[in-house]
Length: 289
Length: 190
Image 1: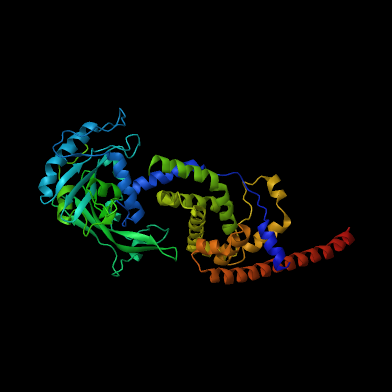
Image 2: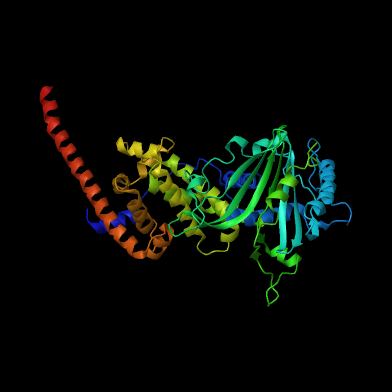
């Protein structure tokens, strides 16, 4: 067989195709759930840029426009399920957040606090969780973070504490997080901080990852500092604390280019310091019960 | 992800899944693994969808993700072990309709078997360049290689493929000769 016969044979190759063994829609549903789980679990050691951007969109979707401190009670969630309706608890947490925010972030202003939203009310293993987004301005510009309060019933959404800082696959199958290095040669930091009551706070750096010409993920720079408090009762409070100034954030806080369009940017530092993060996630006022 | 993005992705997945599965099969020669690869690729694609949806190269990106998934799979030790054992994946799965299997042409069978005998990266180049009939530039983009590398890999891949086909043809001829020599013997024994 000569080369021409081979190439023509390849072009006209006949396959005995079996029926499709899966539903593309089911894969899309699974993908959506995984994306949501990654977000809820505050990344898996590293938050890739795509996820960070998606998180902003997600937060914008779930929290609505948000309202300013002192502007009265926030809007209740729109989705209701009689068995797992946490709207009263969400209201209570929201009120508490409005009280503690100015105290923890004493140098910040222009706060906008979204309603805590129980996004996965119908999910059997994710219902006991609600999330809000907080936006504010400080001397480094506009900022946002998301705060999630999860009851023990939603613990499976989160990476187990024991594995939290372990090297594990991210982005690509079989590639441990430890293989990913920042331009300074170091891996993003992940620290477990024991608390006096036996609980643990995890603080981890996140990074922007890009796909290089070799098709692999590479870390371009640090992008945030997240924290989560694993309580002894199984509940978890977590904060996504990213340096992104999104379109929406820029629009809301008047950060524009000379042509008047929103200026998408990155802050010089994440919105919350480690001390502020720990103060918020360890606040006993955030509970689902 | 916004609802309209989600809907757009679902439409894309419904439209392209069969084509992606065909590509995956040509790479791995195993329908079950091909479906696993397509599902993994779709899940990865979903994450990137909001920034890809309006891109003209979304099909190329999907093929790139799929090819990376397969190359990752090849790199896994259990699959390398399988190769060392000399077990070539079944070209046709047990879920196949016998009527469809029978309709596959003999030339295709020979080429599919030969594809299984050349290296993964060369196979990827050959599959994308000839089975999918993609221009060299798109193959280069899909695999993240330079066009020069694609050309040289294509040449080597075709040489390897021709050698594999010739080996198979030679083995088949020997086998047929043995059978034709055996037949009179059996005849005489009656």
